[in-house]
Length: 259
Length: 359
Ligand SMILES: Nc1ncnc2c1ncn2[C@@H]1O[C@H](COP(=O)(O)OP(=O)(O)OP(=O)(O)O)[C@@H](O)[C@H]1O
Ligand SMILES: [Mg+2]
Figure 1 (spheres, rainbow over the protein chains, first blue to last red):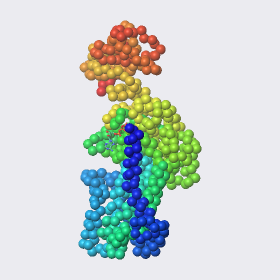
Figure 2 (cartoon, chains in turn orange, blue):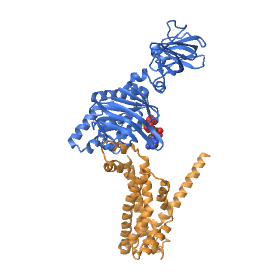
Figure 3 (cartoon, rainbow over the protein chains, first blue to last red):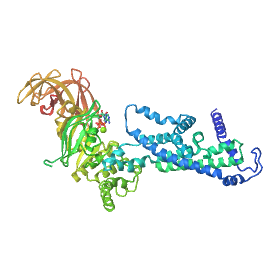
Figure 4 (cartoon, helix red, strand yellow):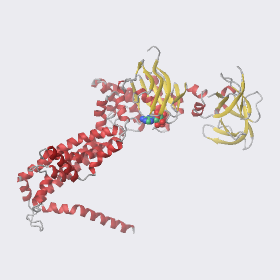
C-alpha cells in the first residue's frame, strides 16, 4: 500500500514537471531546427541564432530592456529599502493601512497599472518612450524589495543597532556599518528579483512605451502576431537561459552571504 | 567630582504611555563599585539600565555620570558601555573586528587598535580566537567577546544586562567569579542586572532590589539577606518563613508580639508600638527543633512534624503549625531524624535572628 502511494506520488510529480517544462523544452529544441515551420525536425542548425544577432531591431530591443531593467532596479532598490526601514522603524496611527497600501501593487492587475499610467501621461502630455515604462515597472517591483528587506529587518536582533550606538557609532555609522551589511542579502535578492521582473514584463511595457521603442517581450509579441518563427524560439531560448543563470546566481549569493 | 559617586540616579521616573516602568528610583553608585539591580521579571531593571546607557529617555528625574548630567547626551556620547543579554555581537564581523568597532569609531590608529584588541583578548582569555566569526564560537566564548568589546573602550561605567542568562549553571558560576575578579582588577564601576538572587549575592558590593518599578532596598549582600527591610525583599532573597503578627508590648530592650496565637519575643526595633501590625521573617537555616519548649525564654512555635525533604546540601524539615501553616527548618543532612509524622515539636530561633518588618 505504502509502496503504491509512493509510486503514485512519484508519477504525479513527473507529470507536473512535464507540464511545467516540456513546452519550454520543445521550444528550445525547435530553435535549432533547420526548417521554417516548426512541425517536423529537419536537422540541426545555428541559422536562427545567426539571423537573430544580425537583426538590429532585436538588438535595440535587448538594449531597451536592459536599460529599463537597470533603472527600474536602481530606483526600486532605493525606494523599497528606505520605505522598508521607515515602515519598520516608525509607528503612527493607521500605519497598518499604509503598510497594506505599499504591498497592494502586487495584487493589482498590471493592465490597470498600465492603463492608469497611460491616462496620466496623456493628461500631462508626456511623450512616450522607453523612459515612460520605468515608472510602471518601479510600481511592480518596489513592493517586492520592501517585502524582502522588511522581513530581514524583522528577523535581526535589534540590540545590534543599540550595540553600535553604545560603542560610539552615530546614526550614520550605525546604518552603514551595521544595519546595511545585515540587510544587504535581502537588498541583493530584491535587486535580482526586480531585474528579472522588469526584463520579463509585458503588459505595462506594452501600454506605456512609445512607437518604435520596444522592449524584448513587446518585440516578441509583435513578431508572434505574424506567426511563431524559429527566430522567436531562439530568442526565447536565450531569454530563458539568461533568467535561469540570474536565478542560480542569486541562489549562490544568498547561500554565501547568509553565512 | 565633589564626592566619589560615579553614577547618581536621582528620582528617576520612566513612563511608557500610562504605564510607569520605573518609579522614583534614586541610587548613588560609587567609583569602582559593583552594584546589582535585582528584581523579578518586568520590575524595570533593563529600563533603568537603558536610561543610564541612553537608549531610553528619562520621563523625569536626573542621571549624572562622573559629575555630568547626561539627559542631553546620545548613547554614543556617553562614557559607558553595555554588555547585552543577547551579546549583540555583529555577525558579519570577526571577533577582532567586533572588539575594534568602538576604537574605530573613536578614530584610533590601526596600530593602537591592534594592540588594544590583543590586550583585551588576553584579559578575557581568548587569545588566538580573533579571526573567528561569532557563530564559530560557543556561548561562553561569545560572552567573553561581548565583555571584551565593551571593556576595550575603557568606559567609566560598564552596564551588564543579565550577561550570564544564556549559560548553563556550571559555566554561569564560573563566569560569576571571573567577572567579579575582572571588575576588581580593573577597578571599574559595574552596574549589573539579574533576576537571580544567588548571583546577586555572590558578585555584588551592593544590591538594589527593585519591585514593580520602585526601589525596595539598597544595601550590601549581607544587609539585604540578613536584615531585609520589606516583606518583598525578605521573600525574594533566599528562602524564608513569613508570619503576620501584632505587637503586644514594646520597650527599648524587649518587645513581644502575638504570632500564630502565641506570645513571642521579637527584636525591639525602632517604631514599634502596641497593636502595630508586623511581619516576622525567619530563615530556615536559623531555626532548629527541640522536643520540649525552651526554658530560656527563646522564641518558639509548637507544631506537628510533617516530613523531611532531602535536597543534598541540607534537609528541609516541615512542621505544621496549629493554624495549618507550614514552617520550614533547614537541618544538616547528617542528622538522622527520629521523628515520625504527627510528633509534637518546638521550632526555635534566636530573638535577634528573626527580622521584624513593619511595611
Ligand atoms: N518599549 C517599551 N514600551 C512599553 N513598555 C515597555 C517598554 N519596555 C519595557 N516596558 C515595560 O516596562 C516594564 C519593565 O520592563 P523591563 O524590561 O525594564 O523589565 P526587567 O526588569 O528588565 O524584566 P526582565 O527580568 O524580564 O528582563 C515591563 O512591564 C515592560 O512591559
Ligand atoms: Mg530585562
